[in-house]
Image 1 (cartoon, rainbow, N blue to C red):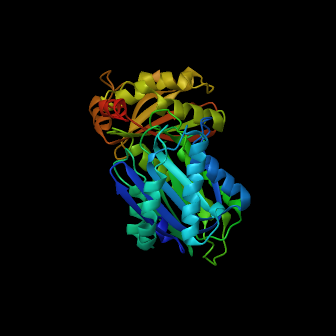
Image 2 (tube, rainbow, N blue to C red; image 1 turned 135 degrees about the horizontal axis):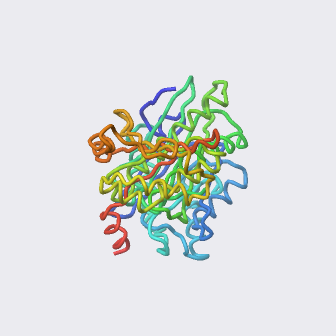
Image 3 (cartoon, helix red, strand yellow; image 1 turned 90 degrees about the vertical axis):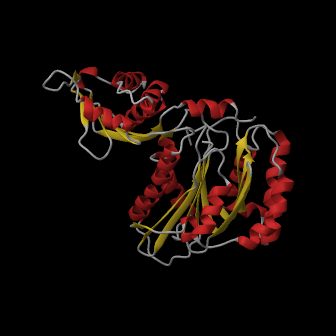
Length: 396
């Protein structure tokens, strides 16, 4: 497996484009076939999520995706449902397909009605600008950006099969399947049942392990769509590994681009009693406001990390915990070993090395619970004053 250029457009049969005007944008992706999805668990579910779920339930076939930014079309009542269906029907007429073969997605301000007339006015030009190039993929990724600072896309190839995806997300991020959208395509010939199993596995170790601010969006949507244009025989394990890589890469891009973030953290918990405990402990650390603010201030306050693990509801024996920090370049600094605070020969922690790690843009936190064999990795970012300022004025 290796990374290739093109994002979603690296996949055979896929074209994409997008337009962005101030806060409003619309992305269009065409091509497809068998399709599955994973969506928000928020009980206040956005209209496009409801409509796309309905379309997938009919025949698991999606031939076009249209996604807008500027309005989440959430908490908009029956009118929001009708607006989402109207957008799907308008695009379907132009593509000469069924409205049920269109997936819709939205991101933006909750409670703001969908500007369906503005979206409709852009469709003709979007259809003319569809491209099967990296530029098309990037244009679609940019169109769905809200507070994102950079577009997010990736593609890989293994054998004669490609998988490519785009995503957006910077705030309101703790997917429990931010506002988070991801559209992943492949040209592998796989059934909807197989695609669903593979997507669930990939999402569980990627998007579901990202926390920016602990809020679960009303609009989280991850779609996996197959064009089936590769004739290659598929080894499921190989496909799963490639899909995992694409989803983890996009998830890390989201964590790195968290609203106002200056640092990303990767938290790996090993030695947990079971996988559920490993997930609980890792996500508690990346979710903790105290850990996040310590990272922002470059303060090596490891006690906050231990405290987060302790309240995570994972089984913990304090006398067994080991903890280290690193920047992924030099040797890690060990802070705790089997429940004991580590000190240098002079009786102090390796302060210079630790200070350098805390100043780095990416910080790795390794926690060994030493009570089992399970592990999990989560990603998050620091909490800065820029995050507060941005979200204090989000609608104004």
